[in-house]
Image (tube, rainbow, N blue to C red):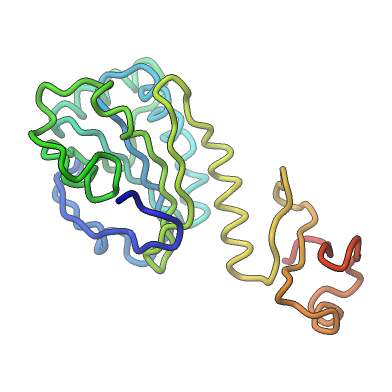
Length: 218
């Protein structure tokens, strides 16, 4: 079964470009961006891996660990990394899992559990559903799940925006409105009474009884 928001992200051990990786030990209670790829040496994924490498300082700033996956062997990842660096200006500076037995892809619901065989002989089309983005919280629960088609590159600025929202709303009794960006007004959640809101968010605005906004908490 595919994972859903609030599900516990499954633990696993797999080969990676930085050696054997035991997911829970590696994550160490951090936020995690885990994103997957259907095959090495694919054009859209090449641009994505380079984009994330360039944005890694932004993920680091937010305490988010980055983890990639492609179904091909780790040795292929190393060759692909050279291409990525050549064409995108920077190669992966985070671990990339080699999922040759498709174990992790099946564990995370990216391929059917009854998928047989290994990565050998499989094409990107066979693995078209291995195009996921998971944001996993320090509590090991899935906070966000996106699945992209192979022909559409992922927008990692949007993923950073969502992380900013989730980290803010995890600390304060607020939600973020459509198109919210850092520094913008936020919504006071329904769990906060008007009396409590006066203390927590002095000067807040009531647009409707169910829609109250305030400046972004510090």
